[in-house]
Image 1: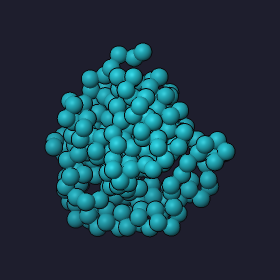
Image 2 (image 1 turned 30 degrees about the vertical axis):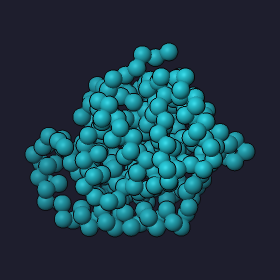
Image 3 (image 1 turned 90 degrees about the horizontal axis):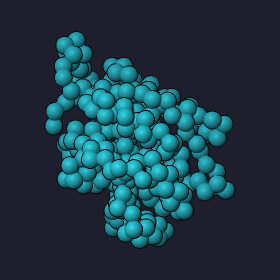
Length: 258
């Protein structure tokens, strides 16, 4: 059993993931201590079952939200609890089994060595990846590169990453966005705007079929519309921020302080 970290935790938001949640949490627990899970208003009974498991595992903590609020809102709930408990960093990972739990120690070690940075997973796709989604993320990543003046973000949508807790909370509390599927991209763009350096590590991503227990709540129309609106907002703000972003780049100003 791993000794509990006092600075870094694993944070898993979950909504109606079914039994796949339990294998994801088990895999994370074999790699890290502690692991926290935020159940975002799930109606499939997984929250109550996982909470019962946590009663006998001091390295596992479960939060039950009364209604579904979105991935970003669930992460923010966990971040606030992490801040209050004295943690400085959180590694987020999805509950559906797509993310490589075996890489948690490597990501945490990189973050511990450079705590001022955000450590981002750069996805390595296999044949299971839907071609339409792979092409779509290339477009989104292209916009992200422009919005951050090519700050070095390898992938803006891959949610397996380590965030510094305080800067991210401060940014999220200043505006109403980043509460749903727009969270992953907008988080890294805004952190980059405030001087938080991205560090990229290659990581495999596995798209599980329904037969394998895979669960996806991605809606092509709804979520692509949300991403389009997000990039429109970010581009507008990017234009307003452009002079200060250029000054920061030229002067190599220190990272954001909340």
